[in-house]
Length: 48
Image 1 (cartoon, one colour):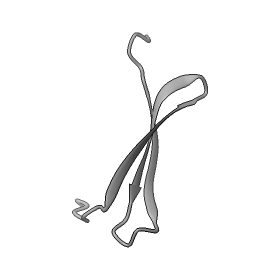
Image 2 (cartoon, rainbow, N blue to C red; image 1 turned 60 degrees about the vertical axis):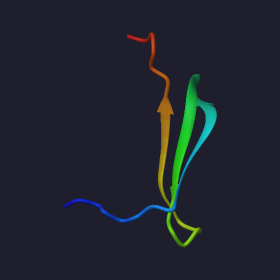
Image 3 (tube, helix red, strand yellow; image 1 turned 180 degrees about the vertical axis):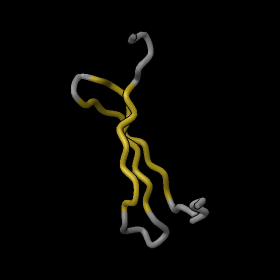
């Protein structure tokens, strides 16, 4: 199944988690209240 729901806002906030630096990503639904998706995207450049 494909999710074709239109999203309201995609927010990225710089930060760190467990010593890794990059951004936290949030997707806020069209009604402006519900956060449907949360993700920390660590910067993996240069790591093996």
